[in-house]
Length: 146
Image 1 (cartoon, rainbow, N blue to C red):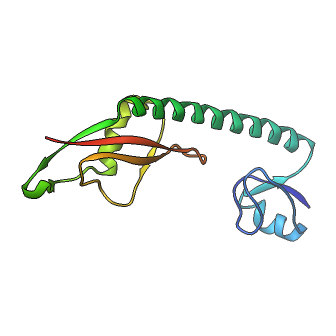
Image 2 (tube, rainbow, N blue to C red):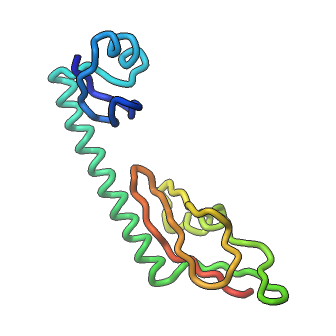
Protein backbone atom coordinates (compact mmCIF):
# COMPACT_ATOMS: atom_id res chain seq x y z
CA UNK A 1 0.00 0.00 0.00
CA UNK A 2 1.30 3.47 -0.81
CA UNK A 3 1.21 5.88 2.11
CA UNK A 4 2.32 9.44 2.80
CA UNK A 5 4.19 9.81 6.07
CA UNK A 6 2.86 12.54 8.35
CA UNK A 7 5.83 12.27 10.74
CA UNK A 8 9.34 10.84 10.65
CA UNK A 9 9.10 7.06 11.13
CA UNK A 10 12.29 5.24 12.08
CA UNK A 11 13.27 2.68 9.47
CA UNK A 12 10.63 3.85 6.98
CA UNK A 13 11.20 7.49 6.05
CA UNK A 14 10.87 11.16 6.82
CA UNK A 15 7.85 13.43 7.06
CA UNK A 16 6.05 13.93 3.70
CA UNK A 17 7.82 10.95 2.05
CA UNK A 18 5.63 8.66 -0.05
CA UNK A 19 6.45 5.02 0.72
CA UNK A 20 5.26 1.56 -0.26
CA UNK A 21 4.57 -0.52 2.87
CA UNK A 22 2.74 -3.77 3.52
CA UNK A 23 -1.03 -3.49 3.90
CA UNK A 24 -0.98 -4.92 7.43
CA UNK A 25 1.72 -2.51 8.63
CA UNK A 26 -0.21 0.42 7.22
CA UNK A 27 -3.61 -0.63 8.60
CA UNK A 28 -2.41 -1.86 12.01
CA UNK A 29 0.39 0.56 12.85
CA UNK A 30 0.81 3.65 10.67
CA UNK A 31 -2.81 4.66 10.04
CA UNK A 32 -4.21 4.14 13.59
CA UNK A 33 -1.34 6.14 15.09
CA UNK A 34 -1.79 8.87 12.46
CA UNK A 35 1.80 8.49 11.34
CA UNK A 36 0.70 8.18 7.71
CA UNK A 37 -2.29 8.35 5.39
CA UNK A 38 -3.20 6.49 2.24
CA UNK A 39 -1.66 8.06 -0.87
CA UNK A 40 -4.71 8.89 -3.02
CA UNK A 41 -5.18 11.84 -5.41
CA UNK A 42 -6.58 14.18 -2.74
CA UNK A 43 -3.77 13.30 -0.31
CA UNK A 44 -1.13 13.87 -3.00
CA UNK A 45 -2.59 17.30 -3.81
CA UNK A 46 -2.60 18.19 -0.11
CA UNK A 47 0.97 16.91 0.19
CA UNK A 48 2.18 19.20 -2.59
CA UNK A 49 0.56 22.18 -0.84
CA UNK A 50 2.10 21.26 2.53
CA UNK A 51 5.55 20.81 1.00
CA UNK A 52 5.30 24.22 -0.69
CA UNK A 53 4.23 25.83 2.61
CA UNK A 54 7.02 24.01 4.45
CA UNK A 55 9.63 25.25 1.97
CA UNK A 56 8.31 28.82 2.20
CA UNK A 57 8.57 28.61 5.99
CA UNK A 58 12.17 27.40 5.78
CA UNK A 59 13.06 30.17 3.33
CA UNK A 60 11.56 32.74 5.70
CA UNK A 61 13.50 31.30 8.67
CA UNK A 62 16.74 31.43 6.67
CA UNK A 63 16.06 35.06 5.78
CA UNK A 64 15.47 35.94 9.43
CA UNK A 65 18.62 34.04 10.43
CA UNK A 66 20.67 36.03 7.91
CA UNK A 67 19.26 39.25 9.35
CA UNK A 68 20.15 38.18 12.91
CA UNK A 69 23.65 37.13 11.89
CA UNK A 70 24.28 40.45 10.10
CA UNK A 71 22.98 42.37 13.10
CA UNK A 72 25.34 40.62 15.50
CA UNK A 73 28.28 40.58 13.10
CA UNK A 74 28.27 44.39 13.10
CA UNK A 75 27.64 44.69 16.84
CA UNK A 76 28.00 41.47 18.86
CA UNK A 77 25.81 40.77 21.88
CA UNK A 78 27.78 42.18 24.78
CA UNK A 79 27.91 40.84 28.32
CA UNK A 80 29.92 42.15 31.26
CA UNK A 81 31.55 39.91 33.87
CA UNK A 82 33.32 40.81 37.08
CA UNK A 83 36.92 39.65 37.21
CA UNK A 84 38.99 38.63 40.20
CA UNK A 85 42.67 37.94 40.58
CA UNK A 86 44.51 36.71 37.49
CA UNK A 87 41.53 37.75 35.32
CA UNK A 88 39.38 34.90 36.63
CA UNK A 89 35.70 35.53 35.95
CA UNK A 90 33.07 35.59 38.65
CA UNK A 91 30.04 34.01 37.02
CA UNK A 92 29.50 33.09 33.41
CA UNK A 93 27.34 33.73 30.38
CA UNK A 94 24.79 30.93 29.97
CA UNK A 95 22.41 29.84 27.23
CA UNK A 96 19.55 31.45 29.12
CA UNK A 97 21.42 34.78 29.35
CA UNK A 98 22.00 34.81 25.60
CA UNK A 99 18.42 33.77 24.77
CA UNK A 100 17.04 36.57 26.99
CA UNK A 101 19.28 39.18 25.37
CA UNK A 102 18.37 38.03 21.83
CA UNK A 103 14.60 38.16 22.47
CA UNK A 104 14.15 41.82 21.46
CA UNK A 105 15.82 41.08 18.12
CA UNK A 106 13.90 37.86 17.46
CA UNK A 107 10.39 38.62 18.69
CA UNK A 108 8.50 36.08 16.57
CA UNK A 109 11.19 33.38 16.46
CA UNK A 110 11.58 30.39 18.72
CA UNK A 111 15.30 29.92 18.88
CA UNK A 112 17.59 27.76 20.91
CA UNK A 113 21.18 28.59 21.79
CA UNK A 114 23.50 25.61 21.66
CA UNK A 115 26.93 25.35 23.24
CA UNK A 116 28.49 22.90 25.64
CA UNK A 117 29.72 25.01 28.55
CA UNK A 118 28.91 28.48 29.84
CA UNK A 119 31.27 31.21 28.63
CA UNK A 120 33.72 32.25 31.36
CA UNK A 121 36.43 34.06 29.38
CA UNK A 122 36.69 37.55 27.98
CA UNK A 123 36.66 38.22 24.26
CA UNK A 124 34.47 37.32 21.31
CA UNK A 125 32.86 33.92 21.04
CA UNK A 126 30.86 32.23 18.29
CA UNK A 127 27.57 30.81 19.54
CA UNK A 128 25.34 28.53 17.49
CA UNK A 129 21.62 29.25 17.35
CA UNK A 130 18.94 26.86 16.13
CA UNK A 131 15.69 28.23 14.70
CA UNK A 132 14.18 24.80 14.14
CA UNK A 133 13.40 22.99 10.87
CA UNK A 134 17.10 22.40 10.34
CA UNK A 135 17.95 26.13 10.17
CA UNK A 136 21.03 26.90 12.26
CA UNK A 137 23.59 29.68 12.29
CA UNK A 138 26.30 31.36 14.32
CA UNK A 139 26.22 34.74 16.06
CA UNK A 140 28.96 36.67 17.83
CA UNK A 141 28.93 37.22 21.59
CA UNK A 142 31.40 39.56 23.28
CA UNK A 143 32.29 39.24 26.96
CA UNK A 144 33.90 42.31 28.53
CA UNK A 145 35.27 43.27 31.93
CA UNK A 146 32.76 45.01 34.18
